[in-house]
Length: 166
Image (cartoon, rainbow, N blue to C red; front, side, top):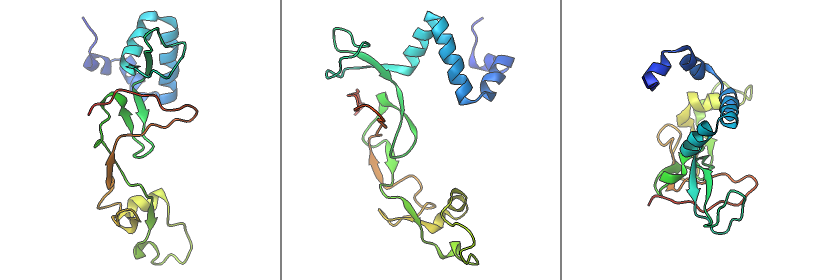
């Protein structure tokens, strides 16, 4: 009998997976992939895609200039995870300017006793934080005023050319 997601959820292993931290799950996955070639190939098929960047010369590249690159990345604009294979021009929504505290409700009875520009205040008073880029606020326009491709963070390397859906 194949193990389905529903069957796995009802097991101790399923509960352990659901309760483990991201750090623990990454360590377990790395360990399994290091010990089992079939598991490594399955993980690669779900977490990596073929890149056709002709400028790269890495040990992962084969003679036809193709290499595996991560399928998922985090966007610097909207700060969400995205699938690089389904990245389209209209998929990412964000504000190019940060929101600033502008509402008078933030300062009523405050008298400089506490910080107003906090995550908690943004959650409690979203209408009091305005974006300079569109004059919208967090309550009325939380997702953004600009649509574009997701932009991946590149801490140490130049961006690779990846296939995009148009």
